[in-house]
Length: 204
Image (tube, rainbow, N blue to C red; front, side, top):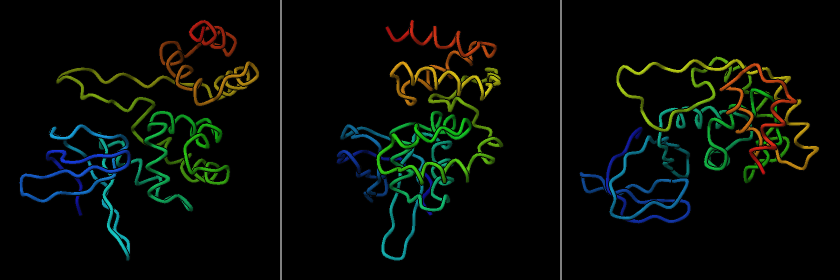
């Protein structure tokens, strides 16, 4: 099984890239965005083996790879749908949508309908609460000796009230949820009214 690849990008389009390794073998890997040719790259790989094909999905972090493999264990969610979810929303926003049972956010990803979104929440809600991913999947490794920030305790009721209020004002959940997370991570005691005011101020 291939779990990690390093090499040079020799070709890339909107869905796939070909990575040439030092051994002289070029691997075709699903990537979320087009990559710049002739540049070196390192990706975590999820190697999917089926009877009729083998496919490689590339991720910038081990957390993304781990969560992708959790998603494809959900009934009705295939690799392409799972990869589309992560590429479109990011792990942090998916985790938040599952935690707060917000199917509308998951439905905003291509190829994910209402039933699939509800199934993801039903299957993964208890599992993600036990994950050590929190609400901030780090994009960059922390410096040696740096303290790991504590996860903010977010009140699901406050989040739901805030999203409902913002919906009434014409905002979409997938646009508002990251702002709610950001403000609650700064101050977890904010009320839904205070959050709405902050979001309105920031969205002007």
